Image (cartoon, rainbow, N blue to C red; front, side, top):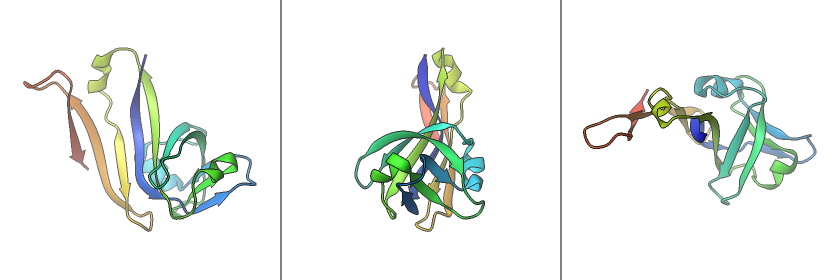
Length: 137
């Protein structure tokens, strides 16, 4: 099995950290829908400010709130104002499946409005079998 990227929120700003909540990351469901991330789905989180890395599950906050709140133990790894990357993955058995997977990547402005919608594309080119490009949506 090969673990690959399925969806990504790149450079979203943490809006809060709640140590006393029972765990997870709270995200705006509109952002999640745009990228294809589901409630209760496990995601990897990488803090661009500190380098911290963690894994937790997604819960939905208020639609349109642009929230990104680290809860429980995860609140110790990120603080309001930090920029993070949130990645959802999937497993494939055969590298040929890479051609069919087109991850959606959202980039963000400082107010957590969506800046760009990108799509990653693996394709077979004359130069190489698994070539890669970023397509603006």
